[in-house]
Image (cartoon, rainbow, N blue to C red; front, side, top):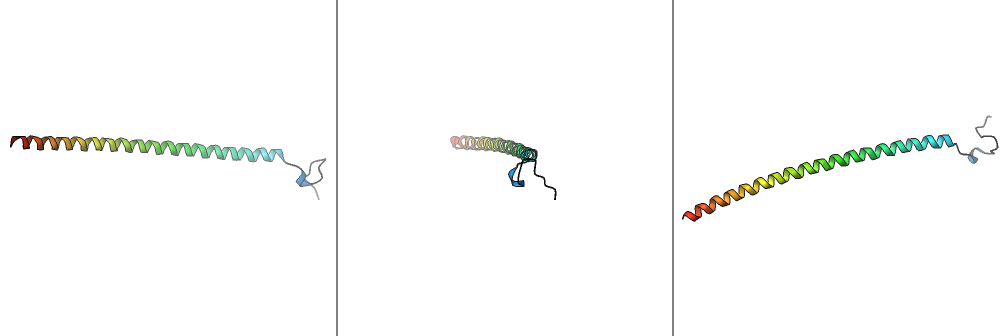
Length: 82
């Protein structure tokens, strides 16, 4: 039976494979980095959509106010004549 225990160690549980740890840490880091990049992209997209909707809403509100003011002005002019 061949053992993968390095020289000087008595048991498989006594040692730690540093290369495998580094590989696993690298994979975890890349995964985390990609996840953060994706989250950032989604947040920027959401903010962009919200800003666009807010501009559209403000524009519609302005149009409604102008229409209301024009209607009120016309009504007041008609009422003034009588």
